[in-house]
Length: 293
Image (cartoon, rainbow, N blue to C red; front, side):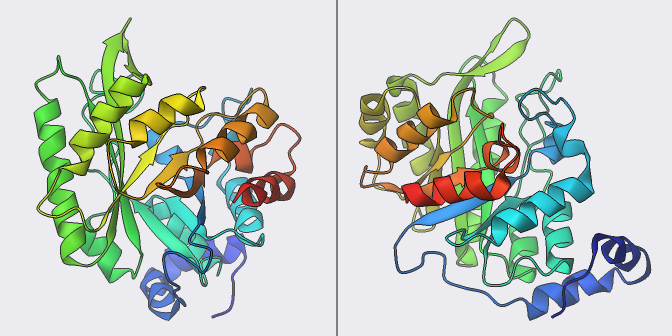
């Protein structure tokens, strides 16, 4: 299929919405893991949850044309395996021809917007398992934030278990990002201690009728021994999340390098720190991350 320009994407959405399904049907797919057994995924699910800042720019991700241009640059770099995003972003990339031979992970939920009174209500507002299957995507990502003082967390667990079952029935990976969370001064904070991360991992690992298709997406804490102890709680494949744009990219890369030596860890899922690096060199930031693998 031929790639479109961003202007043509806008026109296609207005005049031929069916072209999205056509592009999905024609897309060339690839195995989840390549020969190296490692995975480098670029994350772009931030805008749908209203998280538009990157570094010191509070609206960095608000310009869709610029975001797509940065994503195309990242996805074209050697060693980049795929992308994680919501339906709107992934469909733009489909029309742009940027998802050929890439792993595509759809973001399934993020009802709990940061700063909202319903911030911990992470009900499913994105892809459903049936959507991912129809679009010939490869996995679904879901957030699992649990506050032991919030009765609503039981609904969160139940929704996550249902999504894991529905994905597994279709042979699709469920990439679960688990946290023990709590409200602090009106906001939600995730507990990144080894004990809390281990506990969250064990809860996530046990959800659903099978864990055969469950992967975990976990944060890299400052001490490598801490994440190592936490990952002793499971045998499930694990990827590391990137988080905010770091003030010290070198220190972040050292933590990633150390964590990647752990047997569970299969790769990185990183967004803003690659798409909006301090020096604005997207290709350089992506290449540095790929080199760690």
